[in-house]
Length: 297
Image 1 (cartoon, rainbow, N blue to C red):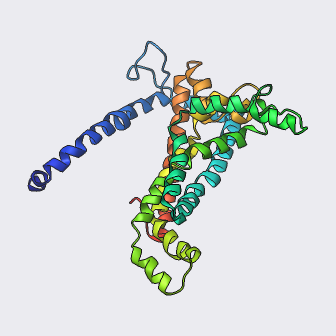
Image 2 (tube, rainbow, N blue to C red; image 1 turned 60 degrees about the vertical axis):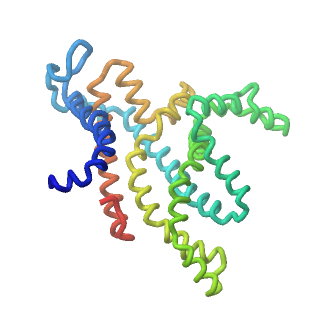
Image 3 (spheres, rainbow, N blue to C red; image 1 turned 45 degrees about the vertical axis):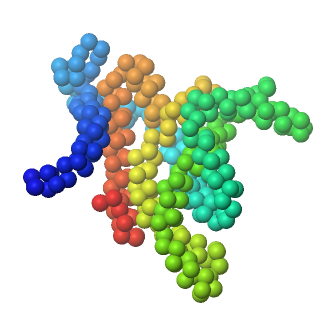
């Protein structure tokens, strides 16, 4: 073992900063999980706060909490069914573009929104969708329709969240799939051409199966974020008018836990979310291994 460490000492040295950061920011903070089972207040530490058992999990009896869970699952489902396949389809389409200049242009334009913060995106949406001077409402009125209160509508809030998330991240998420496509052996395409396969058949029988292992891994890695639907996206757009459909687990933790000083309850909700995410990762990994033999472990 010592001989192996000595042989690969420079590789271990390169990996060491990432390992240290992982320990400091992912494992050391796990000591704070005990706050979920303690009566923690400002002035105490996590070590000398009194134990309360499962008292902080009383939110499970709160009807508002289950409304928040329903909102979270609904938005997570909508974002998953649109946001997961969209980058795959975009990568397949970009790969079929034969003009290099146009291909690079499409990639650059689709990547660009990823670098906007959600605050900037929220400002853009407010500028476009505001009731009085919004560009979209001006267009609707000019066509003879009535203005729509998009930002305060419980009907339009979820489509707005899904569409803005898709616009912002779909291009960036294609990077992995495009990289996986470049790793496919070009001789497979040449053989398919000889056999008379068209571009659609090549995409179906070569390109898509070639990136299927990458799709499985991305699916597994996306499971933890399924419950965390994105407070940084939702919170800037949430207001009292759309709160019945906009309040999700992350905003519930911030509003009912941290802002009101219920740190134990906030930690308990976060712990429950983490456990659910872990179960989703394990189930997805096991399912992926059974389907195509590929998984994280």
